[in-house]
Image 1 (tube, each protein chain N blue to C red):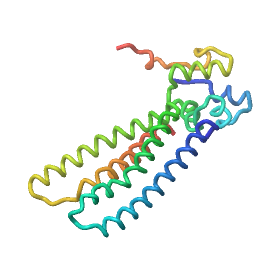
Image 2 (cartoon, rainbow over the protein chains, first blue to last red):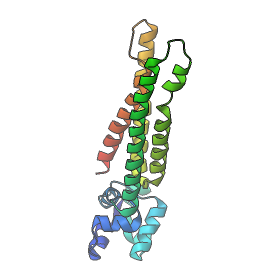
Image 3 (tube, one colour):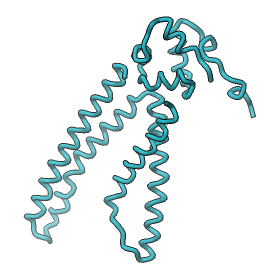
Image 4 (tube, each protein chain N blue to C red):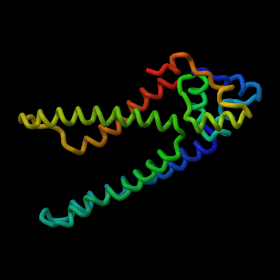
Length: 70
Length: 131
């Protein structure tokens, strides 16, 4: 899943540590989220959306393969 | 690390270190006392169990830390535990068969250190995937 976390963070001039602090997670988790290696839980996604004042869909963009229903 | 996470890690580190220091102290005391007791004195068993108490405190500190971890850290540790459970089981089961066949092997005391080492390796492997 792709996301705009890095852009949103840069717009506010926050470091990964700053964002981690505001979300109550580790800096490593922010890094994994930004590089798309870890998809957040629904509650963490809502926290992120709330922090940036946007909807989850405006921040996270699933790829076609993510939405595939078998 | 942010405040909440680093505070939890710091507290865990302090509590666990204290528990391990107490473990070392009680272990030395237990060995000294046991060596002075007669071989048929059943008090030896009770004294031998003394170091288990600080270990339990260390275990409690770890469980508290686990609950304070964020979701990715928990995921990484979950993968580490699964890796350790699987391999510890396979290794000890295999050694058990060899023992049944008559091979004399190291004792039960190594099972726990083995599982801890494998958990660390498993967690490190999992962590790399999220970097």
